[in-house]
Image 1: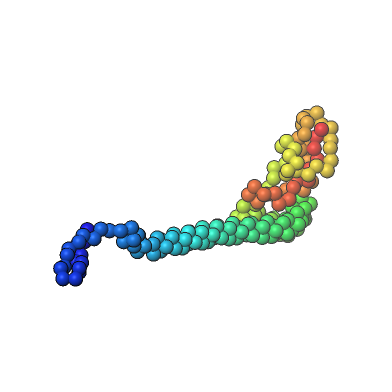
Image 2: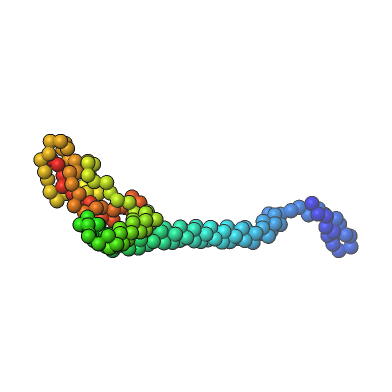
Length: 176
């Protein structure tokens, strides 16, 4: 409580001044700009956190897209080399009287297999395996009591996988 001197003409009289609601309200009025500043700071912090989260999502999406593009390009490249592989395989299966020529084709095929292996390309096992429509393409059926039901009896064209992705299905004959 503040004391104030009051002038009554000749005498100066001291009176006590009590705090009124107006003076009490003036104190929080000074704090209102602080509340506005805190709200503005909170809003800017939320914007920053959202922006950081969007950037993190963008970064992760970009990495995933790059990996997908790389995998797609690699599988497309391998699929374009498969006819060359097939021709080399046919050349080796026919044999040759020219030993040097045969040796050259054999070396080329070995190199092709090494390249496929380094790229992560694997051959799909077919003969003697149970028929799987996700990796085998059945073009013929044969009755063979020795093999059992739905077992691959013969492979006409090799199938290949890149990791767990099928590049080309094996073309096979299935025992029924």
